[in-house]
Length: 138
Image (cartoon, rainbow, N blue to C red; front, side):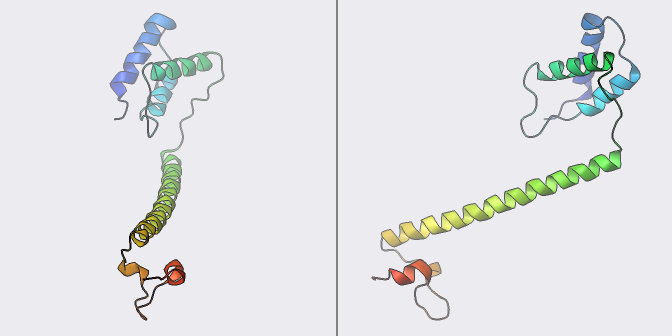
């Protein structure tokens, strides 16, 4: 669930009327809308967290410590693609590791119960492979 513009605009309105007692500059408003348009993945913002972050950015802006320059959309898209590729690669490695672990554990469980899986045999010779070759007592 992404943060919508209406929620951000509501927070800006509260800041303008109850905190800063002035309209926020247009460049700050644009920056806040662009920066907080999407919840951080995978968890999003907790209650009050979004308000706090927007308020902190507005305070930083007013004391001259916030750069409101928005990133080039193409560069932002390239960075996001690179980030997502990294996440995908990490997930694929984890899946591969888990598959290997599950297969080893399953074969050990089957072997301990005297059950033989077709993957325990070499398809060419019909004999046990790997660890099972050394412990073939059946």
